[in-house]
Image (cartoon, rainbow, N blue to C red; front, top):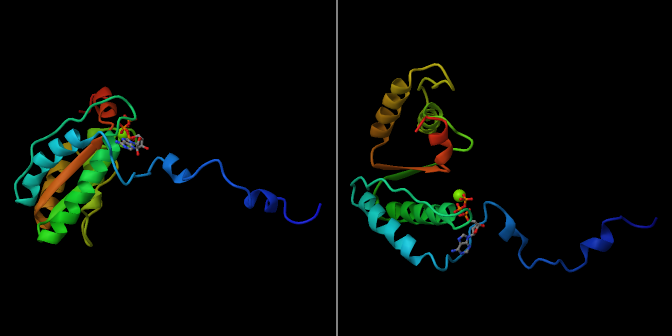
Length: 162
Ligand SMILES: Nc1ncnc2c1ncn2[C@@H]1O[C@H](COP(=O)(O)OP(=O)(O)OP(=O)(O)O)[C@@H](O)[C@H]1O
Ligand SMILES: [Mg+2]
């Protein structure tokens, strides 16, 4: 056998023009047919840029309809605008398929908000309200508006943790 066995294939044209589009974390540059949904999210979340707490929202739709990608896009735009305006906006995205109890959700946020010297919040063991108090005080310490996205939240409800 002569040469490297991958050599021949490497040079060949791929069937895909942009293979990254199949990646689960791929974010398209445009979100056609989601103008209405984007508008609803923006109208509610704009409050955060004025220092107010936006209303809770429940996004629902068939799998693959763009709930995750639209939310990520809106939040990145919100963070960008917040930075530009000097308005403190913090966002947290938690996938409840992986973090699937109420305790773990608040523990995850508490951990993300931890600063040097803070006691670690254990994965289990504390009463949930103690973790919640910790989250609230750490959020107050940072200040600004905090937006929490619970993606695939049905997993949390199924477990009776919602
Ligand atoms: N309007 C759109 N334009 C282009 N691509 C889109 C659009 N909406 C969704 N997609 C793409 O379709 C795929 C599925 O979208 P997404 O994961 O956001 O759906 P979902 O509603 O969160 O699905 P699930 O309920 O399974 O979590 C992703 O690759 C996403 O980039
Ligand atoms: Mg999704």
